[in-house]
Image 1 (tube, helix red, strand yellow):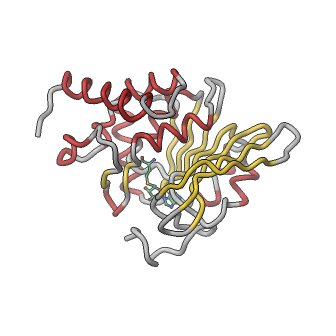
Image 2: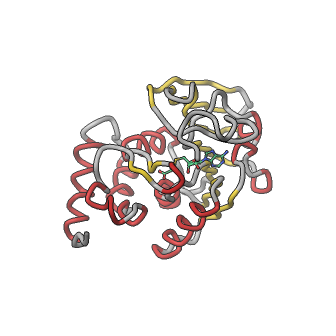
Length: 226
Ligand code: SAH
């Protein structure tokens, strides 16, 4: 279905008001980028009419593009500065990668499925981002070559925060990740102080697809992995 660009902009504006500023997303820089980034471009055409709806949507490989509010909450918690180098684990559709790239100096994003990395890469290139580096691989080991990162966001759920990610986080730095069982998690914010101490905050309950890898869940178990 072809939806005119003007209608898509209206839907996007309504999403920002109803789902983000109408809730607890108050950071104006965050609200501005959600108004700007064309979420529908990261979604299969058959789901486009729901591109600005208040829930996650399916992408390839049994994965999901996260609910807009959840992406906004994670990004607001990270408090991204335009000097920050950010690591994202779980590129998925690439939508959150684009949001991060609008706010940060540079974004490094790792995805375990090659076809998702490629799809995300072509949409991000079409839109014109020049400050994003993507790679296919196991993000539970981070991306040592470019560490340390000022901010890290993990967009899939693990039982614990992988140790290597904490090591690759700058001091000071912030990391956001859903932690818990395969089916229900708590969104955690871990703040590393300039001295290297870590302070953990429990933000809210959430449900993400599982983080599969050496320091995550095994592939092939229960969950949405295929
Ligand atoms: N922010 C993305 C969320 C995608 S869902 C979006 O809004 O589109 C989470 C993604 O994490 C999935 O694409 C999944 O394949 C990926 N993933 C799971 N385990 C991973 C791992 N160990 N390394 C990298 N990516 C992983």
